[in-house]
Image (cartoon, rainbow, N blue to C red; front, side, top):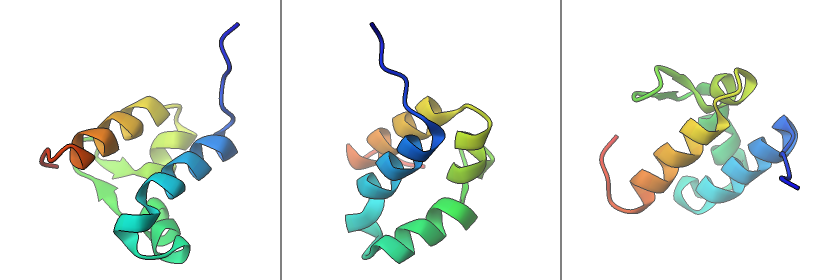
Length: 69
């Protein structure tokens, strides 16, 4: 059986993933809500709300491995 994450769980996953980069949970939340991801042309929040969590996750994993935005 495949476990599907809720949008709240997806948001928490992203916030936890970027918290160290952002410097705090609050800064991570601000990024999540307001910064446009160039590859997606929308914020992480908008992407998750549109069902594009996997695209955000892949983008962040790419960046964490030294890739460019």
